[in-house]
Length: 113
Image (cartoon, rainbow, N blue to C red):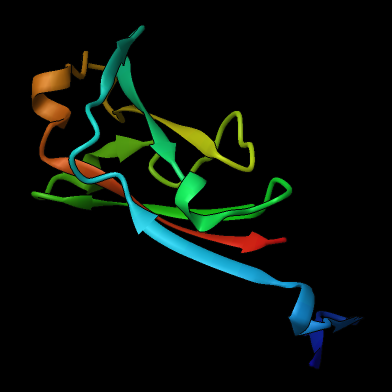
């Protein structure tokens, strides 16, 4: 598979052998958030996808509403082939606690080997 992308005057062309690509996906629903500084974080377990190398993870935060008032909802930290972390906090700087975060979860897609 190959595709060409044009950004401004820059052309990028990529060829991918899809037989080497593994795509995994899931959610952290049911995994508890943990406290840190002014926010919370969750460690998302991706081991069931069976990656052999650290993939590229794309994430979003879903759940019971109010995600618009958060920062960090699509940022991945400490990624490995088996897990990664997402840290979130309130955009207004107020303390976010674990009880408030219980209504949210992380959706993820991993693309790698």
